[in-house]
Image 1: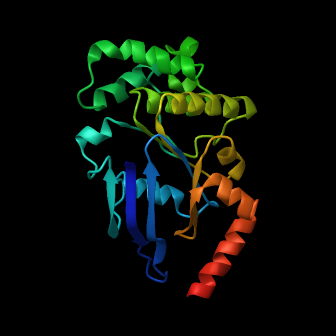
Image 2: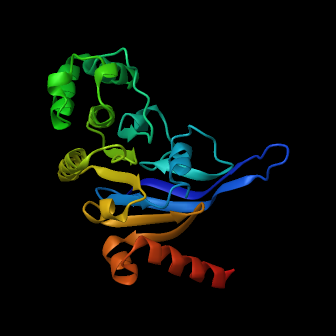
Length: 247
């Protein structure tokens, strides 16, 4: 079963008076098998964040089909998805617990009586339990990133989508995030996270989706990718050469 299926996604941003249109996504297609971890990798500006925003309908694609759990995105499927954007905005006047409560209340059909247990569980996982009653404006950049991850895992989602989850974290913070993702893997969650660093993928992923300049260059197993290309830079060059020959 495919937890997420993306088919022929296209997005163009119109240029200004003296600017050309920007074709940001071109026939982007991939799928996420249930229970597996897929890395979405590409250089900065490759189209990763735009793809994720289109998946969630934050911006409207020009064309393409997107299905979660076999159906288009709806209120029921949203409750099964955890999401962390690339640059999360957290309301700085709220405490850690209040921020999670706000997110919980926005999720349709969740029982109020379960909130405190789930919130404490999430905050302990990201090592923010002791700071739960502090206002977010007193958090460091790394603490804010971890608070965002706590929000993403709060509802124990079946699908977890993280856009650059290691961004802004020190080595200890990165290790903590990887430990959290390993725990989610053991729980059977389908993981999809983006990064421009192949090293992040090697430790966590069984599959890769490689994007460059809005086009999917590779989708498949990580071991096959590594045995053929060894590095992301080499992969981009080889795959672009192949693409040029097919034009």
